Length: 141
Image (tube, rainbow, N blue to C red):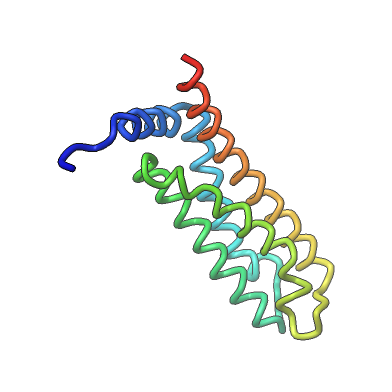
């Protein structure tokens, strides 16, 4: 096969329009900022004495930030990976109880990760919704 399927071309065009729209650009920026905050949050909230959750937030935050950066640089390819933000957000949410040595972190760590995890998961759902909405919109025409 030498050519690509016509539906794939249409899908790429829809994803490009979605990503370059105003809400798409705002969403990409929010995802990037959320990832950066998650990565630096151990030092903002002072996760002192909790090395496991510190490393966890750093790694997950960098991952979310890279997804946001990828969405900004190559949206037609990265928007399909937006679903990854949902499990990453859920992991951030539950990680204070799973990752810490005593399986219980200080209240500041718990609140921080619950909020950052919820925001990450919601941004992932919003990105997925934009993608799904655009693909269904094209079928109705």
